Length: 283
Length: 289
Image (cartoon, rainbow over all chains, first blue to last red; front, side, top):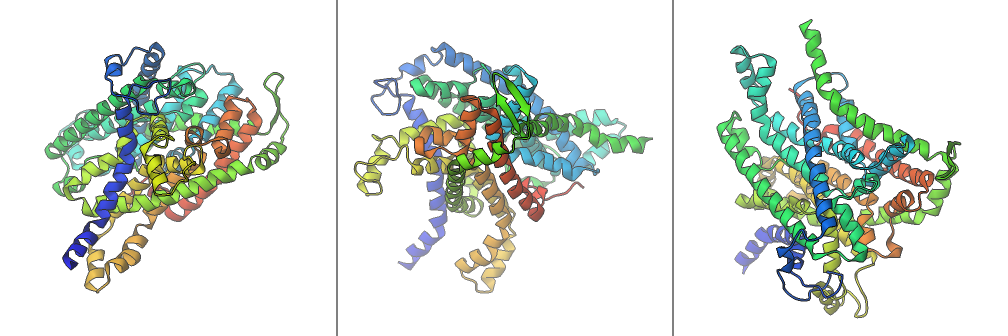
């Protein structure tokens, strides 16, 4: 009896943790299940019957497909822009001591701690005053803006566990600063840069609130869903969401595996490699 | 010469990104502040008249939505902490080789669109769903009652959507905890509960504060959950700002409300940074070497 009680006490937290994870994953399961639903009316909220019909024609709705393409294009350019700008900031913050560091840190933290509705509203206020035409351009500006901070944090955590002696070695062997960066630094921080790029891609493709304010007549995937909500969301949305989820999970796993390999091969001191979680988490 | 150049390097690296943030984050805030003090209409144009009554009028008119937003966000943050702490603790201390997988599951919701996840809750809490009929069986919900379009639905949605923002900083704090302190506590005959209340909890306080801020702030400004899961009586301040900007086009009042929201949150944030340092919020306490 007391043995059982100890076992329960030992595992209670784990049990609560698993319940919490189930709570977090439940909606994803529901989305996937309802992609096989055969709704009787316009609304896909109640289970009617099983069909694979919509998996057969995921891109049958032109507006939906167009919005998805807009989102992918936007996320692509956002991740390139934000990754470049954010990586440069991260290098400056980790590698150099300089006047204004604290202010720079603050400027990176505050956007992450600002409610999206305020970011969206303030950008729209500026665009209104300048009479800027809302569309893909304003969306790209906004998305790069809110992604930069997350890139900085991911790349920064990678740079902190970096063996600087490797760069010194390269320079001792006659490489100039640029060659050292290209041949030594960049390959070593590449996993961090790639996860940062993927993260900003995911943030961009997922964004609704800020896009809601600054899209004009451009329709992204989340904006399409918002618009479709009144007249009933087509089952294809569930199909595409499930596909996107699967693709992202596979991409993340690939990055993790690649990161583990890089860690083994590269310069990280063994004890650091062992302590480092495989996923770089934007905290 | 080289040392001057070397001293300029960090500024060169920072410049492009920080200029982007200044142009598209700081300056827009200024414009929003200016817009909030203007009068006029979309047709006749706006003039800067230092109309501070935009603030007093709109705050008194929408005080209910303001208070409701802070109340919902507060309750959701409390539940996030209640669910998130055991989860983060389990991942950090009990998961063993499943640690990475569990962490992965925490961030997995981010891989599906926020809107679709919220709409999935509409399915889960639908009048005909098994979850609701179960809640009716155990008399948590009255027989003729419903869950959708109530405060409970909005709070459940907020709790769900912002839970990862609570779990990740908590996990980081627990992971950083020096295990030897826990062993020392045990050696000195502290019970498990005592070890937790006297050692673990105080030492993970920075993580708790970061998690509370990262949950409360976005939740207070959210309008997606109230739009999809709430009814007309669940509108939050975010809903008011959204509809004033995008539906009614009442820009000065909308700007005043959103500036007020920002000001309240900024004060809370600066107090925290003063107390814990900006590095703590970024999840890193290592300085440049």
